Length: 202
Image (cartoon, rainbow, N blue to C red):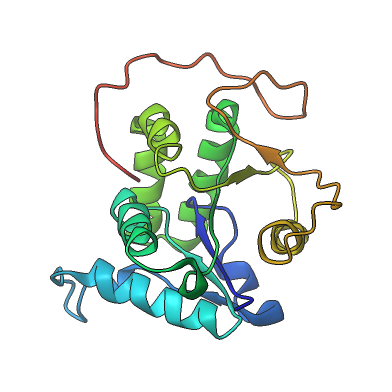
């Protein structure tokens, strides 16, 4: 088993690399709603089961980062032997990238005018702090880009070396997020609102 599942925060570039190097982007909206836009029951189980099946066939599967998806993946990993479970990681912006990521998502929505991209933008603006906090609770490895401008393909290659090949000698340049971190990198450091009482995923 050499596959990998990556839960990617909105705007990381999942759709832009679909088909590259055995990468498959499973767009969650195709599973959660029918052709008329009505919500489908228990879509998340089918969604995550397909991701596991594809990862077992050595694909790198890019999933949404919704909280219900992360919870289901954790549940599935907890109830199966490690032999049958591909590695699951989260790829998301650092907590101090709120402003820059909001601009990124705004540009995407202006280009696509899609409802799902508007929801992603709204979620990032209103629920950024709680989203960042909740993503640390499943104990999945969390990787963040070093700056707002990056090539996701480079990160996927490094994540695969670390998580799939288990190469302890790999000197990865990836950051692992542990809450809000100070940064001297080329992204704006934004004063975070400490009100995280709202509980909603992206």
